[in-house]
Length: 117
Image (cartoon, rainbow, N blue to C red; front, side, top):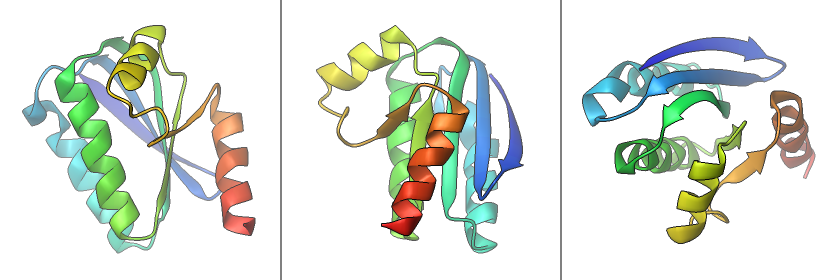
């Protein structure tokens, strides 16, 4: 699995690609999230368009990342979520745990609304 990071508006967009099969693959991303939080970055968008396969490791990563970010009063929005992940979120009753947007631009709108709210 690979990832890239860019800052868009007031959010950090983390674009994931490939297959997220185990926890070791997410170590770099977790470190980057911690670094961003230490620099007072609070808004994160996980762009999942490039994820080829979703399993429990992927779900565990997303839940633990959201928990870590929420502990620092941050927000997370998932975008470009595959049908497979949508079904998995529904089956595990996590669809209300995450904010989900269709596109990155929609995710930024959600974050901006939450900042105003």
